[in-house]
Amino acid sequence: MKHFLLFLLLPLTLLAHMNIAVSYPYIGAITKAIGGDHVDTVVLAKGNWDPHFVVPRPSLIAKMRSADALIMNGGQLEIGWLPPLINRAANPKTQTNAKSFLNLSHNVVLLHKPQNVDRSGGDVHPDGNPHFHLNPANILVLAKRIEEFLISLDGEHRTIYEDNYAAFSAEWTKNMEVWKDTMADKRGKKVIQYHDNLAYFNDAYGLQSVGTIEPLPGIPPSSRHTLELIQLIEREKPCCVLHDVYHSTKTAEFISEKTGIKVILMPHDIGALESIEDLKSLFDYLTGAIK
Image (cartoon, rainbow, N blue to C red; front, side, top):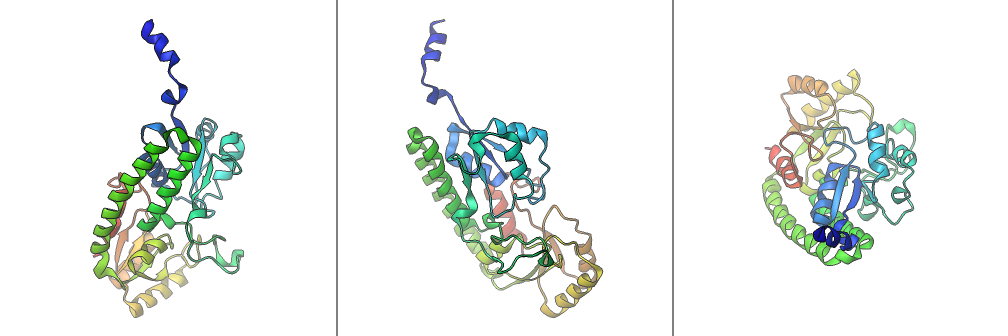
């Protein structure tokens, strides 16, 4: 009984964990690395799902209702599914104007921001390409912002968050040097993609994307576009098709049969393939996949 009473007298800050909802697995991994034992992360979307299209299921609404904060990718990547969750959960802590809400896209420079946006251009993101986490340098930027965010919510553990960020940054910087060396001889290689979700990875390592299997973002490939792409491949001689895990590879395999070009699955997040268990293994795979 004495021990039980002492337990009840402990400050709540020593017992409680912040319950942080995040939109994607990579955000959860960074948040957990910085937050350590003081945060529990609830990841809303799975890594092998198409990040553009997530069904706002009742189970996700329940997770949002119990969250102390929300961290999203932004860049309108979640535009089709996260706003309904926020509205239905009606949790003041996860509203976009709350101090416990963080939009990561506001902390990086987005590539490919369109000058004009209309439906004739396909499913274009008005703010620019939202897949910015696939440049490993941006991971450090995001980690720093998440450190600041956690401190703003829980200043009592500032030193812990700062130390965790310092350790994460040091280890990530070492990894980046390894990936840089691995990709050094790939600079200038031409590639085809299904969807331009590797824009930041390509930019980081000097790969040149010369075409996409989608004729426009979000538009399935037509027979005409596929034949035009085969002709482009014959002219440009790209090394490979870099293909996401959530679209069918049927068209890519047809193109491969006609041209001899390799099709390489490129995971976009933790859990996109069974072997991708953390952020390091994600970039180990991506940098090692292109021969």
